[in-house]
Image 1 (cartoon, rainbow, N blue to C red):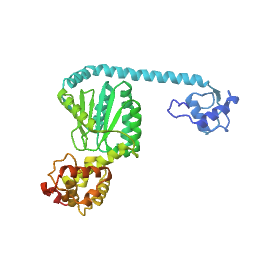
Image 2 (image 1 turned 30 degrees about the vertical axis):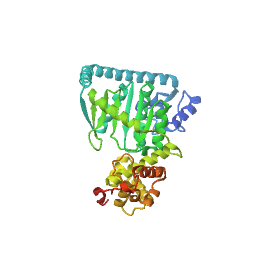
Image 3 (image 1 turned 90 degrees about the vertical axis):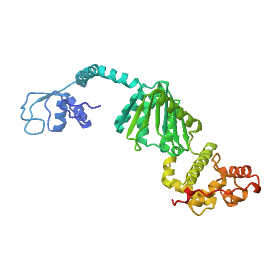
Length: 386
């Protein structure tokens, strides 16, 4: 790599070419065939030594230069520059060690305060990331992370990859939960493949959950504001244990991360996402709320609802919620008993394929006969316009 002159002007490849062409003619004067700027940079870098001549007639091309030039061994120049750089590095290292020694008592006092059990508020992304990075470096056993909101940006994943791999390389275990929509991102899939090669485990979940990071079950980070520009670092053992247990409950329900494709896992995820959207429709939630909770775009949420409306044969949002509630597709929800006659046949037939059988089984199981018929009260929350 070309060296730099003492005045900070780097040598160019053309300067090295000029130096090579001058070697057979040196020591001696340099005629006007050599570019003056290149000669000046070579002298400044130490590759050429200039002696004699008129200092007023410099190598810029003004006047006549009667100086004698001598080629200098590049190895000597490199060695001299290396000594200068090492001297500068030693000076910087000395200042660094002095700073560390001066701040050591404060660092120890802060560590004792932090580890005594409590919490600390970090405001601003720079401070939050710095605190998380420090906790990542100190982590040696396990990290649990919940990352809602669908796919993460390439910049965020690229920045988090080196410390994550370093932590995994130390033998720490890692469990991460994304929302199902993260599977659609090629960048996220590439990140997951990389960390899984180092032993990490990644799963996805259809429901909404809060952002959470737990290190060694000793310290946890949770957002303090909706825009996540303020975070709380928690070191209270009981609270951290509670958060870790909440993560484990979500982990049990989550599905191992696999790329989208024609497999059983993808079919299950599609089924779960549609069921989750149905629950939001029955609850009367707006599209924006549903999309935010499930980590998908509003447009994609509207596409799902449009397909569900076509399958159930509904002509309005309120009717769709009514038909879903009466169909029995939402297993586990508290629903009044109903008759087979109370569920339109067209609604059952148009239920999404993966859950159609479940609807029929639910109706048959919960509706023993017309003599036990009960009306399903209309949900008032579905009457509000979307």
